[in-house]
Length: 356
Image 1 (cartoon, rainbow, N blue to C red):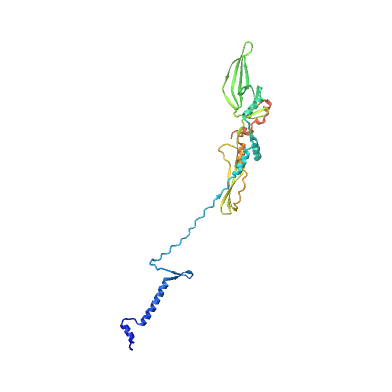
Image 2 (image 1 turned 90 degrees about the vertical axis):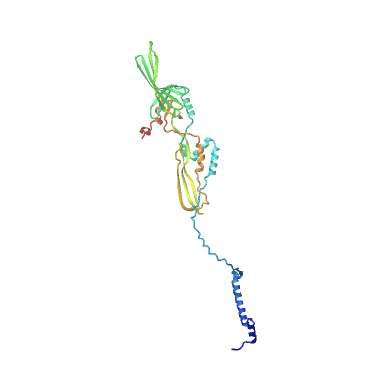
């Protein structure tokens, strides 16, 4: 084995590092430095270098992804158009400004069937008219519906006319008996009582002298309603009186789907009626119609022509009383022939049939 150079051997012997070992160590240091640099630096997007500081905290586990929950869509609201308040108020103000007679004329022009209802005049005015026609008369004729005429002989007083009807005279020797019914004709109605009776005795000169009287006290009502009409020779009692209420008898409600996804409801009064008002009765029908066709709800609902008129029509009939003049209960006449020939007082077929 060849001997090492004297200088090398001197270096080893002195505890130093040989040049070969020194070169290997330098190379390893460069490798370790490069690896550390690689770990210390990362490349950011876009080419920029970003420093990362090592940490001892372990990385977090990724959070679970949130799954969206689908909810049912809310139903679209129903749009109900407002009532035609402005049109109602405007028309009502116009009718309020009219005279009472002009209101009725307007109402008949707007609703012609109102002309079929017969308006009753004040009972006191009708009674005054009968007293005027029969003033000074001592005989009147009374006829109940379906009955014969009664001749009533009497006189007027402050209450009305009182007289005798169905008078019968019987004579037996020197005793005369007179039997009759008493008829009272007043503003409120006609009544009958009796039979009543009077007795007379013949005196020495053959004259009848009152010997007393009697009455059984039976009372019957011929008619218990006031006069509603006075004609040229007759006054009619007992027709039924009523008031009118104008109301919507049929309403259509249409539900429509709008093009924007909502729904609207259009209400329309399609028929009105003049009802003889009795509290508690029904007021008509309402029909709801639904359609699947889509409409442009930016356009107004079809116009409701009747609803704005209801308030004004009810104002026109307010305070008015009407009568059913087809079937009076009784009548008073100033003429016997007028009484016999009056067809209105004949018994109707419904009267003859009697109750079912």
